[in-house]
Amino acid sequence: MMAKIKGEKGFSFIEVVISLAILGIIAVGFLSGLATSARGLLTTDERETAKNIAEAQMEYVRNHSWSTSYLKSTDILDEYPGYDVEIFTTSLEDGNIQKITITVSHQSKPEVITLENYKVRR
Image (cartoon, rainbow, N blue to C red; front, side):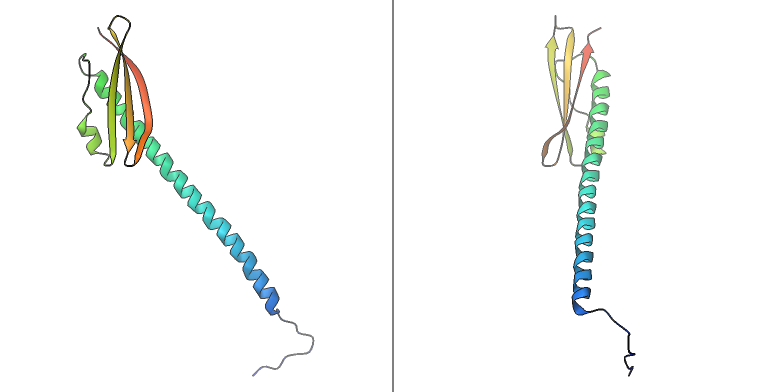
């Protein structure tokens, strides 16, 4: 058993409780920041993947011969499970120009990204 030496002071119970409260507040702030950044990272990854799919689908459509409607490439979508594509065409001018709109959705999100471009009949 150790005897208390005169003049030696320790931490009081109140000091320890206040220190733990401050540490808890800092930890909550840090952890909520981590959760927010993780959500942001997932959203960024989802949008970047959707952009890559939309660009690949647009290239696929542009390489096909002229048509009033185009089917989506299942080869592209097989690489990215959970994503879906819709392709819309609108004839412009004298029917020799098409506006092609590609919308990519992911699971429960109806529209992650939309890409528009034009195709000219040659």
